[in-house]
Image (cartoon, rainbow, N blue to C red; front, top):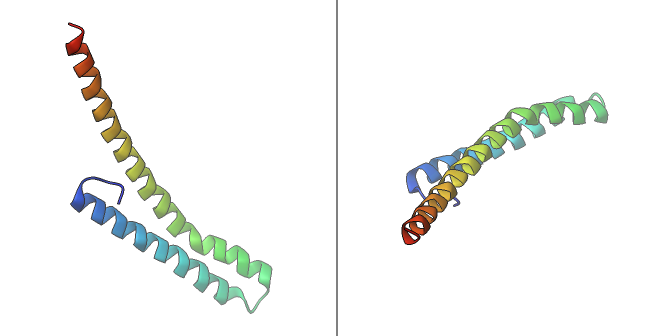
Length: 88
Protein backbone atom coordinates (compact mmCIF):
# COMPACT_ATOMS: atom_id res chain seq x y z
CA UNK A 1 0.00 0.00 0.00
CA UNK A 2 1.66 3.15 -1.16
CA UNK A 3 -0.71 5.73 0.30
CA UNK A 4 -0.49 6.62 3.98
CA UNK A 5 -4.17 7.40 4.38
CA UNK A 6 -5.83 4.07 5.18
CA UNK A 7 -9.38 4.61 3.86
CA UNK A 8 -8.30 6.36 0.65
CA UNK A 9 -5.53 3.84 0.04
CA UNK A 10 -7.92 0.94 0.51
CA UNK A 11 -10.47 2.41 -1.90
CA UNK A 12 -7.90 3.22 -4.58
CA UNK A 13 -6.23 -0.19 -4.30
CA UNK A 14 -9.63 -1.89 -4.49
CA UNK A 15 -10.52 0.12 -7.59
CA UNK A 16 -7.13 -0.71 -9.06
CA UNK A 17 -7.88 -4.42 -8.62
CA UNK A 18 -11.28 -3.94 -10.24
CA UNK A 19 -9.63 -2.15 -13.17
CA UNK A 20 -7.19 -5.04 -13.64
CA UNK A 21 -10.12 -7.45 -13.59
CA UNK A 22 -11.91 -5.37 -16.24
CA UNK A 23 -8.77 -5.42 -18.36
CA UNK A 24 -8.44 -9.20 -18.16
CA UNK A 25 -12.14 -9.90 -18.66
CA UNK A 26 -12.43 -7.45 -21.54
CA UNK A 27 -9.37 -8.82 -23.30
CA UNK A 28 -10.28 -12.50 -22.91
CA UNK A 29 -13.95 -12.18 -23.81
CA UNK A 30 -13.15 -10.04 -26.84
CA UNK A 31 -10.44 -12.46 -27.91
CA UNK A 32 -12.63 -15.55 -27.67
CA UNK A 33 -15.58 -13.78 -29.31
CA UNK A 34 -13.55 -13.19 -32.49
CA UNK A 35 -11.27 -16.24 -32.30
CA UNK A 36 -13.52 -18.21 -34.65
CA UNK A 37 -12.95 -15.65 -37.46
CA UNK A 38 -9.17 -15.49 -37.44
CA UNK A 39 -6.31 -14.90 -35.04
CA UNK A 40 -5.49 -11.38 -36.22
CA UNK A 41 -8.99 -10.03 -35.63
CA UNK A 42 -9.05 -11.82 -32.27
CA UNK A 43 -5.83 -10.08 -31.18
CA UNK A 44 -7.05 -6.68 -32.37
CA UNK A 45 -10.38 -7.10 -30.58
CA UNK A 46 -8.56 -8.21 -27.41
CA UNK A 47 -6.53 -4.99 -27.47
CA UNK A 48 -9.70 -2.94 -27.99
CA UNK A 49 -11.50 -4.86 -25.24
CA UNK A 50 -8.66 -4.17 -22.83
CA UNK A 51 -8.66 -0.40 -23.43
CA UNK A 52 -11.25 0.58 -20.76
CA UNK A 53 -9.31 -1.35 -18.12
CA UNK A 54 -6.04 0.21 -19.22
CA UNK A 55 -7.50 3.71 -19.06
CA UNK A 56 -8.84 3.05 -15.56
CA UNK A 57 -5.46 1.69 -14.42
CA UNK A 58 -3.63 4.71 -15.81
CA UNK A 59 -6.07 7.09 -14.16
CA UNK A 60 -5.75 5.41 -10.76
CA UNK A 61 -1.95 5.24 -11.00
CA UNK A 62 -1.93 8.95 -11.85
CA UNK A 63 -4.02 9.64 -8.74
CA UNK A 64 -1.63 7.59 -6.59
CA UNK A 65 1.44 9.29 -8.07
CA UNK A 66 0.05 12.79 -7.65
CA UNK A 67 -0.94 12.04 -4.04
CA UNK A 68 2.59 10.73 -3.32
CA UNK A 69 4.08 13.82 -4.96
CA UNK A 70 1.89 16.06 -2.80
CA UNK A 71 2.99 14.25 0.38
CA UNK A 72 6.64 14.54 -0.63
CA UNK A 73 6.25 18.26 -1.33
CA UNK A 74 4.72 18.72 2.13
CA UNK A 75 7.77 17.01 3.67
CA UNK A 76 10.16 19.18 1.66
CA UNK A 77 8.31 22.35 2.62
CA UNK A 78 8.49 21.41 6.29
CA UNK A 79 12.25 20.75 6.03
CA UNK A 80 12.84 24.01 4.18
CA UNK A 81 10.91 25.93 6.82
CA UNK A 82 13.05 24.31 9.54
CA UNK A 83 16.22 25.30 7.67
CA UNK A 84 14.94 28.84 7.32
CA UNK A 85 14.25 29.01 11.06
CA UNK A 86 17.78 27.77 11.85
CA UNK A 87 19.43 30.44 9.68
CA UNK A 88 17.55 33.36 11.22
